[in-house]
Length: 483
Image (cartoon, rainbow, N blue to C red):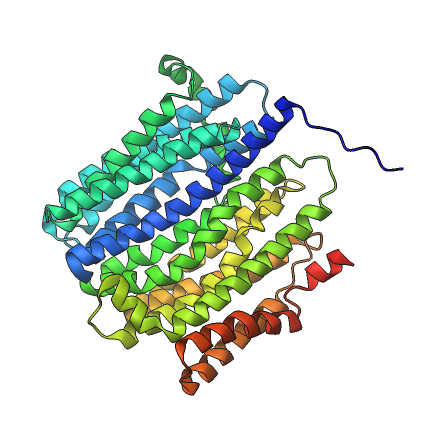
């Protein structure tokens, strides 16, 4: 006998509204993060041209990679422990983690200065760029601490506060670079905006986050090693492979000119647009998995597979449109007048790996079921090291094409290792994705040769392509669930 529907109390309604608002803010923050990063590349490219953009992307890669490596996964560890209630002594957890962040900040600053001493004059940045590395040495500790604040806020369930601080940070970064680029200062000094934006995040987050006093931090020196050891288990979790998309910029800086690196960045901007939606949705799925301990996870597996398939389908339709009209898009976004075939080749090389990778992002939180994060961590670490090796090996011989190939090969390898590592419970099959990708390739050549009018092309790829994906079984999990 069915139970009578129950009217929700005002408190329950308020709680549900808060949940929806937090989800929307979390998803929006991650999407805005990627969108602003790409918009900044467009802004710098328009203001300084490919040469200035090449200098900026190299310094940006230094900032991101050093910050990632110096953090040791501690912020991700803290977020997980707080969200899952793994530690009762929250104050001690925060003190132990903050001590490691402070020590990491020192190591990150010294590493940035050492890297600057080595790279100035030997890369796309000239001999006068040393002050820019000094600015980065200040920005890295601020970045580490603001990231730690964000993780604590998310772990405590204060998603709105974390998202608000993150949005302020991106707004300050965007406005700062817009104003600095208007003064036509050398592109290497645009990194000053990193300091302003990270400081803004810290000040905004501090209003909500009540942390233990700094005077208590040094009392936890004996726990630093154990905290780092715990953090290393989560180094590459929480979309940790995002750092991989800066490794190519870093290695290009040593083997090609600033103009070539900037041209590569321009071509890669359109390809990296495919990360906005899945990276934006990933926090929602991660929080859902964290809160699903002790229940039947079959529904989560089904929902995640369905979302991954739909992301791939939507991205494939958009990718095909981009391939067919790439020259027009590039001229509109960057006002490019250069060798369009070179840009197109870089874009087309990057695209397959990004399409496959974007489908795995929403599935990554499934590794949290059964405490299998270390499996994902090992997979991502291997792919990161593979990518660094491929960039170092291919770029000297193939330039920007070598960087694009290194990224794509690494992401395809990750896709296969991910499918194998996630195991039978998730029932994630790679064959439909590979067959669907082959259909996109065939459809491009047919439509490109047919010279069909623009609106008719959009109608064909938006209707026929998803149907063909269904034929090869991309949506098979949906059908199983409905039956």
